[in-house]
Amino acid sequence: MPETTEFTRRRLLAAGALAPLALGASRAAGQQAHGTPLAGDFLLPDPPGEKLRWAIVGLGNFAVGEAIPGFIDSQHARMTAFVSGSPAKQKDLGTRFGVSRFYDYANFDRIAADPEIDCVYVIVPVGLHAEFVIRALKAGKHVLCEKPMASTSAECEAMIAAAKAAKRQLGIAYRVHFEPTNIRAQDLIDGGEIGDIRFVSADHGFNADPAYPPHKWRLEKALAGGGSMFDIGIYGLNTSLMMLGRDPVELSARYIYPRDDPRFREVEGGIEYRLRMANGVSVSGSSSYSWNPYLSQQRYMGSKATLFMKPATTYDRNTITVEGNGPTREIGADNPLTQFAAQIDAFSLAARANTPHKTPGEMGLRDIRLIEAMYTSADNGGEIVKL
Image 1 (spheres, rainbow, N blue to C red):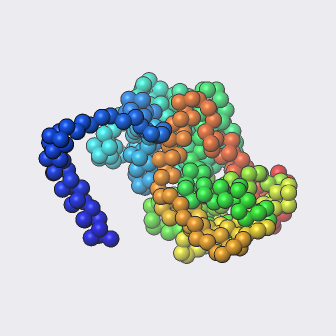
Image 2 (cartoon, one colour):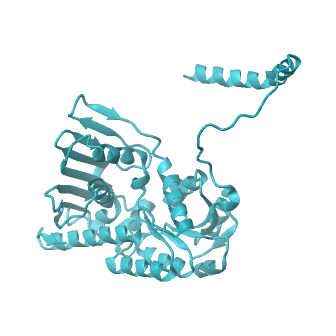
Image 3 (cartoon, rainbow, N blue to C red):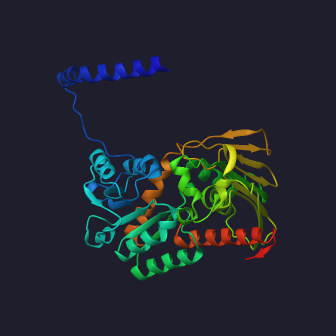
């Protein structure tokens, strides 16, 4: 309560004001303060000079609203450079966050000679991912790339090849793997809380507004790569496979959007799909750019109980409900905003050791291949595609 908070604050302030008097009284009584050994191990941040140095490529809404705050909370990373086509934005953000090294998209390759950049975070539209990831890798930098990995599986393969040639790490920013509520859900599933998974459903979507700049480019194939499945549906796809710990052996899909909607002249506006695993488990999923309100939900149905998440993969609020195997339980987790710093730190440690990241380029390639197979199935009336 506010009163309690204020009382605690005042009490602490008062304690600070009285500390010198208390110390004098202790010394008068012959008391001595002695240092005591630390009890336990403490996870401390790296000293500033030892943190991995990062360049952020693209300063759009996501970069400014989510990624940059993640760096502020990071234990192992710090921002040292901004890459943008907007000098004014660079200057403003540079002043706010103590970044003074600026590049634009034309002179980006000069980062090769910049010793103050170890890693690059690519946060431009999907259609530009392959270009800037490959350029960064050729410049000798480790690269974390926003999801989805690229517009085509061929581009993904080229990105992986560039990482191998440069002997650098390539990670895909599947932040959900670092989000506390989803980690808790995976722990419950792996621990047998719901028994053997029998069926999974995953539904994600929102109503795309072409007048809203962050939505507009998502409706242009050259920039977006694909439609709703690339952008919002990939969360359900990737997270379901994370929870199952296996990949599908076949799939089928159909389009589920009004084909005369002018928003979807270039990209699909909605798709439903079914993945089938070798052990008989199915994942039924959907994504859409024509749903209102925003939807993010996943359900894991097991032999003992069902785990339901709604919201499931958002930036700032996710929930878990377990039904069955006892009373219905609402299960909380830590602050979901920590997922951004946790992802950046995990990649920084992988880059420092030059060992594969938890969500590597190969995972991004797998997901793009699956989405391409969904489009093939949907283009052919929902035919089954063997994988």
